[in-house]
Each structure stands twice: as structure tokens, then as C-alpha cells.
Length: 67
Image: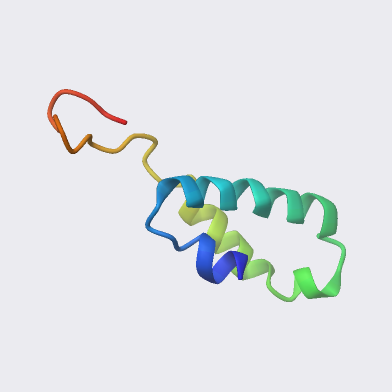
């Protein structure tokens, strides 16, 4: 669910939280076969998350500020 639902969310806050959870899972559970079976998907998820833009244009003043 972490990879299919939260990493692909359109909400940037959900994606940021998913990155933290994914890092925690890999840090603590990378030795397990279940995690190793999906390691390529995890790598793709990290690439996607790390390539996200930090700020997004504000809807009220898109040329003046970022959120």
C-alpha cells in the first residue's frame, strides 16, 4: 500500500510522509525477503520522491510566491 497509494499521491505532503516511511522501512527491514522482493519498486519510488519539486505555486499569487 505504501508504494501503490501514498508514493503516487497527488498531495505533496502525503508523498513527503511516504518518503519518510519508506526510508524507515528500508532502514529497519531491508534484510527481509519480502522487502528484497520489491527492492526495484522501492528504488523507483525513491527516485520519484527525490525528484519532486520542493515548492508549488500558490493559487492566490502564482507569480509572486511559492508554498
